[in-house]
Length: 143
Image 1 (tube, rainbow, N blue to C red):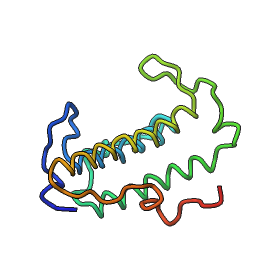
Image 2: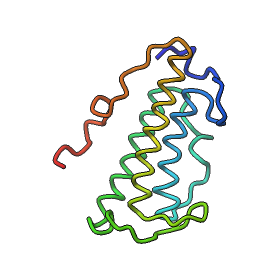
Image 3: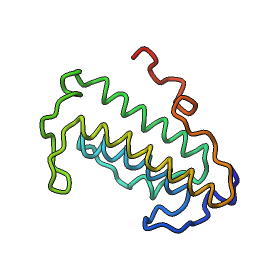
């Protein structure tokens, strides 16, 4: 990725206004949902404020956060994962575990599209972000 584009701000209505900050936000949002909201674990500093400055660091942190997500999922039964029972309320709307899990992965895809658009607007040919290309080698293939 062209280093000039990495931290270059682009026009948006979000405070996540660079490629690095969008990717950091994806990491942070997943960490907050899995650790803080679902498991009530403390997060002393939100991820976006302690995000790695480079692609390698963000990706390493992503793998760590995703491993925690996989561990959380492995500890749940199929019935728990599929349950539509209200688990919590978010912005005064009922949210089930299935909703949370869908949101986590959909949210990342949404921002991945923003990253691609931002890179193109900054004159950079974006990398192929298709999941089958970027998925970690440790992702389950037996499902």
